Length: 178
Figure 1 (cartoon, helix red, strand yellow):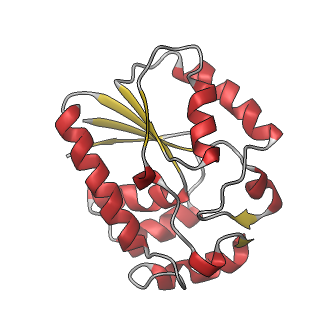
Figure 2 (cartoon, rainbow, N blue to C red):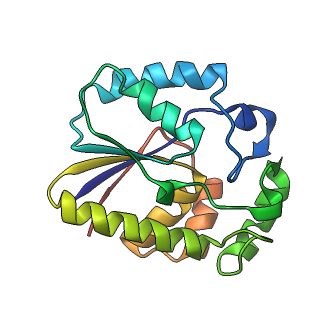
């Protein structure tokens, strides 16, 4: 199965420097413009299925990017952002400072990156049964940017987290699984 992964378009929390976690902000005006760019780019791509996080910023990204295409769109909570617990909605710098210590140990009253990897792996296993030779687009969050290299390519989570913090952002990442 081929996987194309993209983060949601820019949210109001992104603009404000807030780490949303399980908060549910909408897209910022810039994010709405980004959806139009994605619609144009993804028009040239074949996807058997689009799967989005249930959080508004991801769901709206998927809906707006594919509003004029007849393509299956599935909403799945397993693509949610990491639950930062008491740090949901905190300044991004506060959350960034805690990330490395939350690979195995959950954020206070939240979850760990291992927890996110477990739910992401379960999602991919189900998608593989449904679309073993297909191409699936996942629209998620920073957490998937961290855990997909771990789940798909067995990159250690600490290394995947460090790379996600330092690698240049790109519109999408591609994987083949298994």
